[in-house]
Amino acid sequence: MKINWNYIKFICLIICITGLYAFSDHRSNSRRVEEISLKFIGDNNLYLTQAMVNKLLIQNYGIIKNMPKEKLDLDTIEKVIETNEMVRSAQVYLTIDGELTSKILQRQPIGRVEGKSKFYLDMEGKNMPLSRNHSARVPIITGNITGKSLEDVYVILKYINSDNFLRKNVIGIHIEHEDNYQLKFRVENFVVNLGDVENLEQKFNNFKAFYTKAAKDKTLENYNIVSLEFNNQVVCTKI
Image (tube, rainbow, N blue to C red; front, side, top):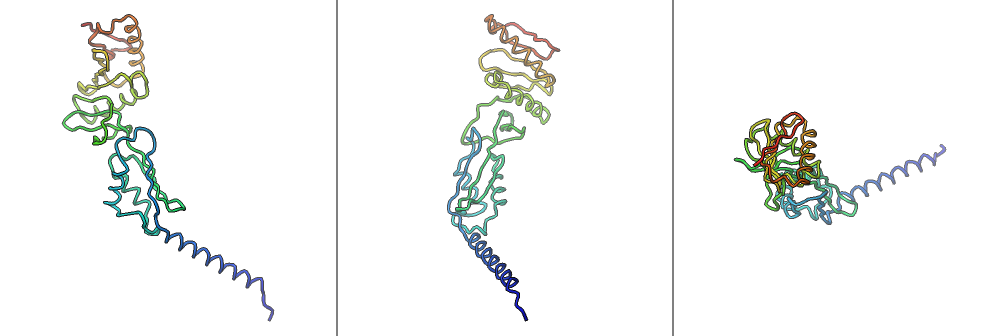
């Protein structure tokens, strides 16, 4: 009987490759977490600290450093970090040298509600708790706080944040009632009656044209109310 050496060589090669893979996989799984790295993504990471994240992980997952890789559940660790109300999203991965890295995106407030309950509105229009670590310098929201009025305020805040002039100068939004909103400015003493959230671009363009001319004429201090709710008009009330 003639022995097919090529066939035997092929079988031996398969066995060697399988053995090497199993050994490599076992060695990889038995590797322990050497270091933990927390990285905050983006700007204004003021509401959450590395110490807070570490404490959160220990309380909900245990001590991770020196833990074997095979016992790690990266999805679970991500979900644990995302339970913190200051976290928008988290991405967790393990490097080949045993460093567990967490990339964390914090939530960013764009307005602060001052009512029976005090909280921020974040960039997605969701309620965000106040932080012990930092008080955000964002417009203060007062008045008749309802679900509908906060939805409208979020629309106004998004527009304000997209405009450099408004972002620097608007410090407050007062809700008279739904569909009737007032703006307070940093320097001037007048109140801007915005009306509803329809035609915001046109309203604000009209206002900036008025503001530029009145500032040039040095007459801004003569007004206490500037109304934008009338169609394509700026109606001013003098002191």
